[in-house]
Length: 107
Length: 124
Image 1: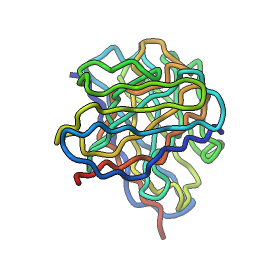
Image 2 (image 1 turned 180 degrees about the vertical axis):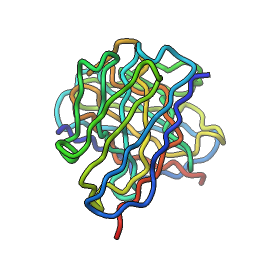
Image 3 (image 1 turned 30 degrees about the vertical axis):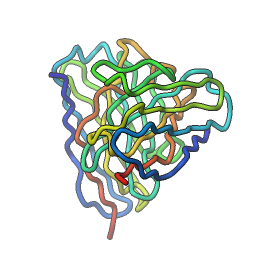
């Protein structure tokens, strides 16, 4: 199985900060990398697919980049509603696998 | 509104069976692959199984292969997961999730709609 490793596992930041979360795959996955946001008690919500494509309705302050094994999710200016847990997921090969999550907390 | 609603979870003893259901509405169900993903505090998100729009492609995680069976009834806009020989490690919140692209499979395995989840607890 392809292992997905996110860093950091947790992150404290302030409203207005620029934040970057990293996801590394254990082998090349081309651009088949997706990002989700999950808030407590809710299902994950798709933010970005194919490494850099924003899903419909997702604010433009979210962006994704990378290919091969290294990917990043960037939030350009944190808003109060962005404090949540973020997961990466590869869709290069079944079984699909997820990163362990990055919890973004208010500083 | 695109919606998925899971049901069928509960408390079950090890070795017993349970059948989960996922009712879909708000989209053309038989155009989309649907998957089951489970979540636990310890192991995070784990993909369990998926079925293509026409049931022509089906896959399972190794951890459930031979014990779980996924199926769908396009006439009823419903997805199912038959879970047999349940183990304590199957305890999780089970989500059904719809792929974003019609007729998408494999590389289009990203999920733009998830249900609210149904909790399965395997314990004696």
